[in-house]
Image 1 (cartoon, rainbow, N blue to C red):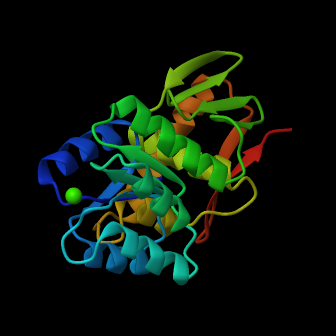
Image 2: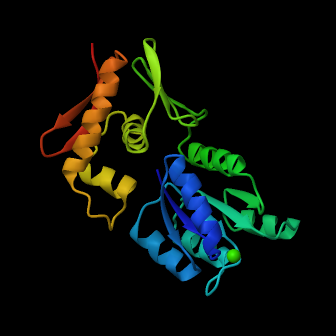
Length: 224
Ligand code: CA
């Protein structure tokens, strides 16, 4: 999942990026409101973490503008101010949730999971297909045979495949979501991680496999 972090406090950006990347998210960070709008125009994000007090254009204006354009990306507002009015104003302007600084990393992560989950109409933190279960909170992949904690890229690839069970996902879409639009990663890197994932699936006796469709992309298939 790709998140946009909008926050002008550089040390906080650094800390949050490390936490989010450590928890298997891909993160783009921007430091002011105008930059945030430009990124939201160019990329489809799975969620936005938006500070309210920003130089240039403030967070509420960013939020109102993207909602006015019909962008329904889940938005979690961060603010140092914990007054009730700010919370109400944020939620009325189209935010999905609100977190007052300072906050614990675990709470931030739980709220990101909740807001991205409700956006997708999903009710728990588990994705299932065949005999596979992927736990979005612990990154553990399990089958009746065993369980293993997936590395970052493998987790994100499998999560994307599980979320679109019938669709074919082109290598370019994995690159855009996981590595970012401006990365110079090529399709063979995706293939390397898919191979690794296939080995993990084989080790766990998964009855689901990743099928490569020539020149089109990848999809999950259940073995009969
Ligand atoms: Ca700020």
